[in-house]
Image (cartoon, rainbow, N blue to C red; front, side, top):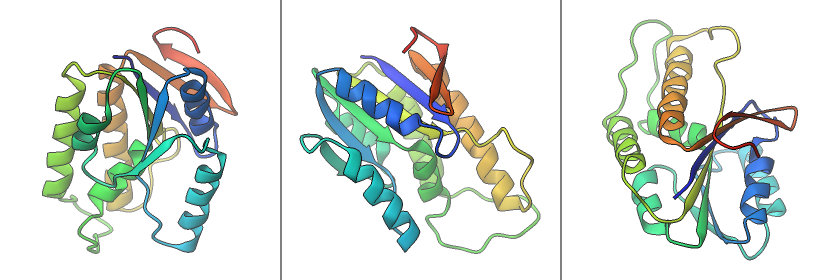
Length: 186
């Protein structure tokens, strides 16, 4: 099974590249969406992504139990496109809907710790089918203000590093242009 991680900033073209790779494979595609429409702006973003997907693609929504869902969906002749790891991380980190202090350490939720560990364990086991992960690279800017923002950037960076280490191919996208960091070129 091939595992690919596609990284990039907001509106960099990372999802479009992932969708093209999935479509061009000629295989059955399952689009595993991690986002949740918490407000009108996010609902609009989700609608935009849905509109550009081919009708024959199966869409599965999973905001938290990513490893379990991958275990169910991965099979020979199929590509599972996970869009996106950063939203999944956000769902897990903010699942308690609590206020966070501007300073001081941030305590990560049990759900976050358990689900992150489950994904790493899943990535270390052989599985059938192919997976394309999409994730935001948010660590290229300034260190953000506020403890929770810094904790999110830190955890996103750690997640991207750990997933990249376990993937066969890693691609960084900027301005719609892919740069292969690991594995064969796109």
